Length: 313
Length: 297
Image (cartoon, rainbow over all chains, first blue to last red; front, side):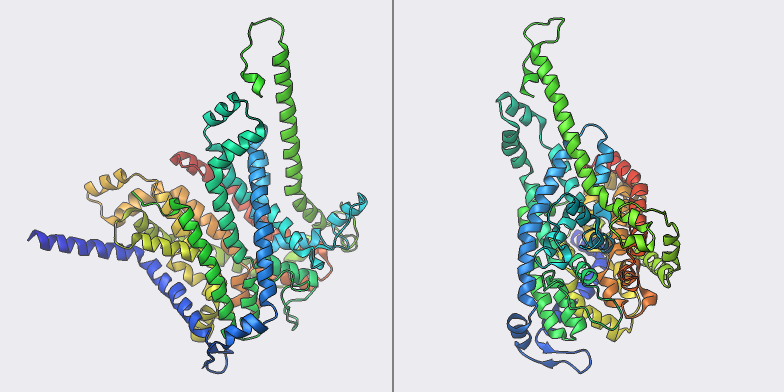
């Protein structure tokens, strides 16, 4: 008798769990599992959206890796962005976080001012920077020339377009500032006092007290930064479009990456292949490369930061 | 700073030398830190200032290198609103952001609750899958999703392919809410159960009121996400301007007003301003909720 009630109780509790999870279970199946499997399927098919898909074996894969002229430049740009943009953003975010913990007067005002650019919508922020940095009449180059400094062409020069994007990313460093600020305030004060009694210099206190305490957060910032770089789409696309002067919807197609492929990123290739060249199969190949890279870094994140998966009780 | 800790050997009515250097050092440090703070504040605010000033220049002055407007052309903002489509973009953005946020919150709460408080087999696997979905670039699955919405359901040219999925839980919102719900002590849930509350009633009557700050945070993030989204409208709405959102339309604005930086910057201000206003209004509720529950950001 008791085993029967136990079994029915267990069944009821399983049903209850299923009911609560049901929105996500449907979402997972329809918007994640199905399209992911379908992406793998299409990566082996020739499909232009009009004629029915036909089996093409590894042709799409060979095309993307060997003949598609935008793939390797995009991958090289991604590597550049990971090495330079992510690093600078973490260092700058930590610096601004440190600064805000030292500011004693008007802390709230400073914090809000530092945080606001992060909230600026990406399209609007990129348009603003395209204007600020435009070589002809932009205020930044006006000021640089007045002070006799070299005034680069920023978004119009392949050598300067990624540094200009990096500047834009540093402007929106508010998210990292908040994370680092919270981490810095969590460092036990006794450790600083002990270090001071030992006669440690400011640098030594930072190196031997602050850094070891916040290193998990630094790691978290680096890995999430890399994952965000894999998704980096709107800013480089808009910057290239605005700088190139291509008019949307006027029948002209914008070849992404202006100037000279220097702002190409992997997500832009999915759009270029799928929605400009109507080569859905090859677009799916790039999508899977993007998937593999993102998941590899996500796995790293979950392993490094066990807290993310901590049990709920 | 080390000198501050050295106890003065003897209290004299005069300020001792060590104390004076300590004080001078503290003042110098205050000046250095705040000078850096002002420099950083300039870096973060000047772009806004230049954009705003340019938005008020006359057409001809906007093409010059001037930084300050000679005449303040507030009419530029009127011209932006008079641009065909601009008000439609506003309406579409509010629909996408408003309805999308409401659907996300309603559908994500029960999932987050189950992941935080129920014990069941496959819970950590589910959580891992939620995190994986959260980290997935939208471009990975866009080809089959587009074919699904456009070819099977014939819904391209509308925002529905972006809004409907939000009724099925959003991974980031589920994750964030779950982290928040973890901080609610189980004793409250047990007490509700003892009082004869079912799971749904416990969730609605006990958990939701306590989770308000977490829900507010999720709603805010989701609203900003939809407001800022460019890729989604580009894929599904690009072919019909009647379905464009502000973030998507803004760029075409630059195309039409090719050299009119003043009008383009006025439109840029109008896209940025609502997000910043929402933040200022919500910030208080945000901070209040966070301090009330004793959860540190």
